[in-house]
Image 1 (cartoon, one colour):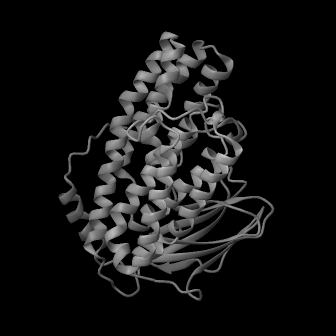
Image 2 (tube, rainbow, N blue to C red; image 1 turned 90 degrees about the horizontal axis):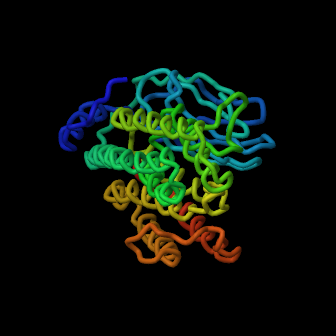
Length: 378
């Protein structure tokens, strides 16, 4: 794939996006118009196979015995929108924006594998609606932010990789967490491509049958648990750079909409709740709080870009989100040397009571953040 460095200005991008989306058909689905998605351990049932282009709502219910993930995907497996960690017996409403075309709705029991899928055809019919131009600017600015984060990540990863290949264990450990920040801030973009995240950010318990373990966490284990770096690890270090360069090239081509930004912000909080707060993400290095902060910063960036429209539509929601973001950031500041540093204490030093306090703050933010997508499409 040829490297293409984005040089288009945000203003030009806005103009292009406006031309594409100004005539998007809007289907603000009430319960009767929403796509009912019933997920179980071996099935994925949907109430309709065709909807008009625009904003669509999935009313998801997991009737299985495992946590599931529900995605709207393109035929090539790029993700339009998704919701992970829908627990057994729980429901979730996902708002997404889709253009005319062919898609699939995928339910992934246990959040592994290809999943069970249903076809979805999106047509160009429906009521024409003019979108607030501020949303087009939000998308353009977020695309630029994601590219900036990818561009800034590569030199940090190369520093980490050089230390690994030099056998300088202490330097590699020091470079590990900083190399992940840009990725953690924009992880929903990387996950939308489908193939990059499994190669770079999979934990040992997230591997599927036949998958080779590669990426950051494989190297993390070598540094902190195995305490040795051999030829295999050096090869994997080079592969990490290659895979992240692929990510860097593709960021500018990601499918981004206002609703995917809002849903992505919520997904980043879910990442915190299911990996960072539990200590599972960086289980060998215990650098979870750095990743935690990156996720929160990425979620807050998406929110701040959408806030002008969300505030107009639901001022009470944005007031609550401002409060909860501030509270969580203040809490995180307790665990680093100063608020401008990403030098957090080792997560194994965080007590059970402190972890619960962090978890409660994440949940207090996640609940109103789940309403952001609906607020930007009112």
